[in-house]
Length: 88
Image (cartoon, rainbow, N blue to C red):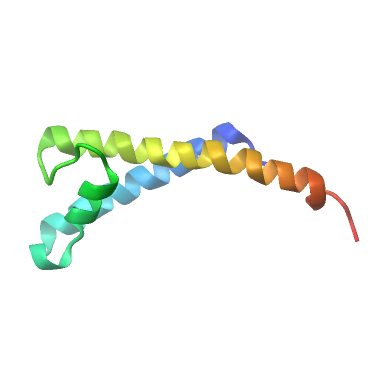
């Protein structure tokens, strides 16, 4: 069984760190090879790049990860209770 709090925080932290790495990558590479358009599509109101927009993107990234944890854990635990605890 998974703990919803732990998985949600872990997923939120993972997506936040991934966002930071994407921004750093975008700042050190030529514009033609980074994905700022993708970030602008998946993160509402995010625009490449200002301080305010960076923090908005960071918060939105964490929220997406937390959402994934909040949805995934109950589904996983449902199937674990149904099939995972039975031994063959």
